[in-house]
View 1 (cartoon, rainbow, N blue to C red):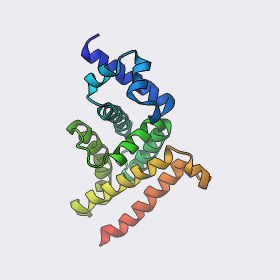
View 2 (view 1 turned 180 degrees about the vertical axis):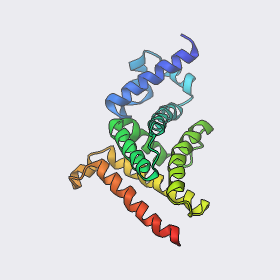
View 3 (view 1 turned 90 degrees about the vertical axis):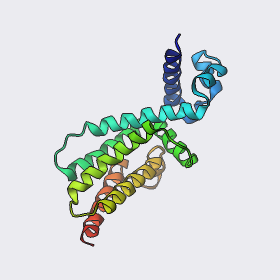
Length: 196
């Protein structure tokens, strides 16, 4: 098996482990047992498990980006609501993968992410930014960019609760409704901000 084939095989095996057992199931030893490759081979291919997790996280974020790019709604307000709905559904359908993205960013705030990884995150935030620009054309660029980033950070933070049953414990409101209420309250506040 070539180096690329080994890496691809290990990445796919890792995704299977995460899907079945979450982040706790992804250790070098468990990956070795599931794949039949030695721990040494895993480290030779990826350097360390953080690099392996980053590949997994990139795949998860890239999957989200593709889903968001599939939204073709011409009206900006409806499009932004669809982005939030698609985001929420994606997180709910990929809880284990998304929790890994969230927890890695939480634990590794000083990490130097690759340009490919950062471009993917920027493309996601860029979709929100472009839509907000259409909704609030009088909002100055710098203020609009801050608003887009705050919106993404808020959704990203809320997504940690979507990966657990915490919201269901406190409320009978569905997760998608919580996220949509958040976005629409935020948009209402932005109307005021546009006038300032």
